[in-house]
Length: 221
Length: 406
Image (cartoon, rainbow over all chains, first blue to last red; front, side):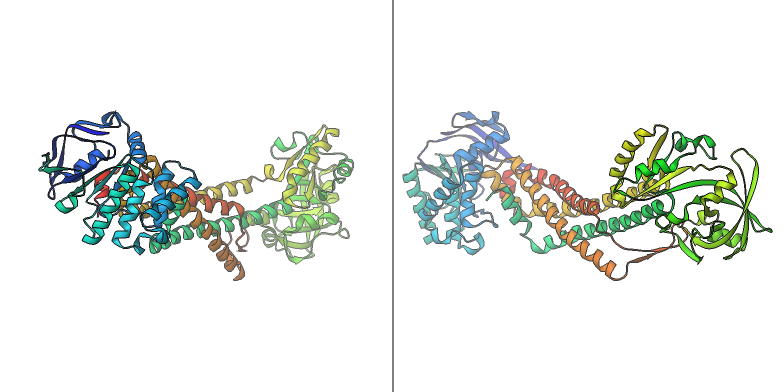
């Protein structure tokens, strides 16, 4: 479980403090699909960053799998991300010099999974996201939808308990966005991985079983 | 797909920038190889000149001789050189041996008198020991001219002495009595040193023995087949001299103070050059890696987000630096070898006479393993070290800022 208690974080933009999230209490259980909805600048990305252990909030408690993140070293947080959290980014964030296969394989290398097992898992997942025939292609040879499928496969390949997706369909056309959401939903059912994604689009948000809204850094529901 | 593989792909990601980086490494490596090869060639020439005109590879003398100051003392002369020489010549390492007696005195043509450094040699064995003397007029000593002498070009000029000129050498015997002998100039030579040419008088050993009134010799010079055999020759002579406890030996390197001084000086200059070139490579790679880190903010943020540690990011940059160094260094070795070959094929480099030397020389570029090692190590060390700091900065980057960098 990921649990936030009274989490607040302030950014300084142009020297002015801007409160990104205010006293947020929030939790996600394994296997859930949760959407975080809100307009641009409402604090969605900050909330996901805190949930994903990428950002240490100014105040409040973040517990992942029962561990207080404020007490963890940078290396320990990296290990938690490596083993338990997958990320899907709005701009895909694939490594340009690696093929689709290698991009998906990379988290398994970091996790120390043996070569044979690695190749088996990557091939199976690429097949599952419909990219078996594109595995040797580099990101610049793939379409936006294909890149996001590779990013989803990368996020899931290490069998994390949570996948955090920041506006995963924002750069995709509506048809491809629908396909990507259906795929994520299906993988959630098959693998039991919790899925937390942010969006400003109510139609996309409707894919989630639980929806929370954030405005001006305050979690409304 | 491991860190090395990813690093290698990152190295060739921006090919134009990589090419410019390699060019700076290759240029530095070429400079080190050519300069190192030039120095190596010069050392080799000076070494062989020193060995084959003055020292031999090894000298044997009475104990204490090498530590005594100037002057000839009966106490330090060898009475039975033939016996010792017989022992030494048993070794196949020994190419030649000869005996020497040296002294100082005055040399006169009747009108002009100049000081002289007298060398008594065995003419029949001199060929190997005079290989680096250039005969300007006449010839070298031989057995048919027991009263002949060969003099340096500076001395010949000072005495207005040409071939067949008759000169008188004045000195003192070992007992301190003034003595003189006549000699006939059979040749005028140029040695490596201009100073030496001004005082150099080479005479048959019996003539000098007669002048100083002794039948002994000062030292036995031993020449190996090759300078590289000096350590083996040293071991053999050391073992042989156990039967002659009153004798000791010195190798050419122990005796060649001038050579050691030159080597130390030029090695220092070479090291400084390698350091400066290494610094140039260091700054060039640091710039490349810094730009690379800046361009890859988002990618580094992604790697950190999916679980890469800070140490892993530093390792990635250091691996890239190492690969740039080793690939650039190897290309540099190839380019440096080609440049050295081209210089040698074009007839070498004309070098003006160094200070104290009588003539200039044509230098070639030796393909020196030491210069190769320096070039490769400089490239690898500078490149690897310069990638640490950009790697460190990248590893400390705020992940959120990195992910949103455009």
